[in-house]
Image (tube, rainbow, N blue to C red; front, top):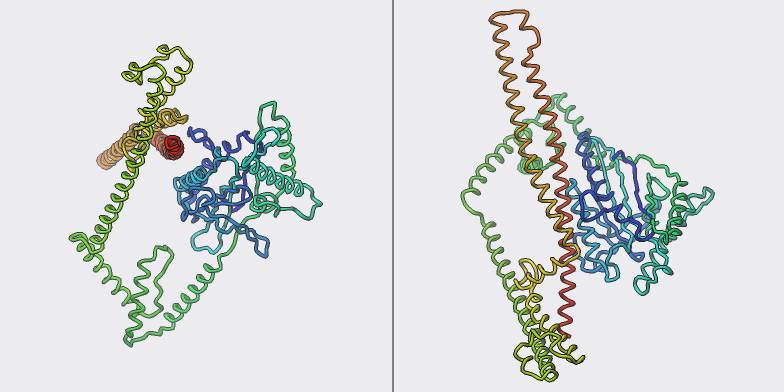
Length: 607
């Protein structure tokens, strides 16, 4: 906020709590991590300081197997990690690092920033690989960029805060992983090894070369590790005795980091475009003042080109949202008067056009309604085609399962002899047959019958875009899902917070009405005492009135209560918004897990 760069990064072995520390838990509001708490603190401080104009942007970079990916790019809808835009490192002649294809998204308040964080985490979850279910096999860097400027000043302060979630180091000999997990572990351990090399080189004062370029992560964090930045490291340790060696290694790494001393400087710069514009404006103002002082006036009529130019300047001035913009037409009273006349005409035309717009629909509205109808028709056709495809698939699946059931029933009939099986194919007990082979066939028949009964529930998708039967399957899946208890707990907590906020809002209104009532009584008391002082002056009327003092004390007490409840109401709003984001994230994860489960079941039925 003061213009200095900062970095917070967590380092430790796998499973020691780095991701929980940086991003927090997804279940409870009090388990928020450093990133959401930092966003809340920053925007709370920005609201307090009204003397400067602040601009806030965020970026979210993921480094997986030494490849960078932008998690906040709005132009890509990723279903795989490879679909996200790749971020490349570029270096200018001054050895400043630039990240190509890394987008900066503006956030004007805490809600937008948390939504961007949620979007990045969702992209990270959606784009995970089958070997990356926990989404902790990569390094992630969430960066908050802040620029501040005083109104009318050409000096801009720029700063950035890196919040880094490093992937966990692990010993392959202990974990025994292979395949993709082994490749991921190699890249993770290699990048952390390069990070340790950089830390060792920075700790040794005599070293002239620091190997930043060995990995993408150390290149991105060059300023954070040994440059213009205030850096804090969080060492996460495992309390398990089996991990004592890794814990000691983490502590040694933390000792090396503590030896590094960075020199953070204030990041101030002068915006050359703003300075040039200010100087030009100042020169023009001085020329205009000089012309007015010398008394140079013109009486000739304005040309058509000059009138069109004045019309354009006036309209541009009215459309400009910049509070510092001015309408500069020079020290010519003819132009000044014409601009006022044109401005008045525009205001009158605006009033007339507003009345016409209210009285009848425009051509644009008709076109938009026709386009909306076409879009709706297209959606209905696509939905109908989707339902036809679902019906065809389900009919084929039902035929296959029916044939399997018939084959199983014939086998049961041949083994146990008959008629009982045909009459009651789905209610036979294992005691009805004593041979081992019949027991196996009876179990198979029960499994197939259960599958047939369950088949209608596996034939539809959730939500408004899915058929009704699959909604039942989704409800069954949701009920048995591992996160169902957490989702229900969050629902109940959200309901409680809504009820608390509603009750608190009513109390705030009551206190505000009471304060207004007390103010009215105090004003009435003032009027009465003033009237008595005019009618019969006395020394008693010059003394403090105990009734007024009592009213003032009551007003102050109610004000304190009002401020306390209002601040609590603001806190509840932030907590409710965070809970809603957690619910949305859990909903996305539940939907994805259901789609994976649905695909597996459909594949099994088609085999």
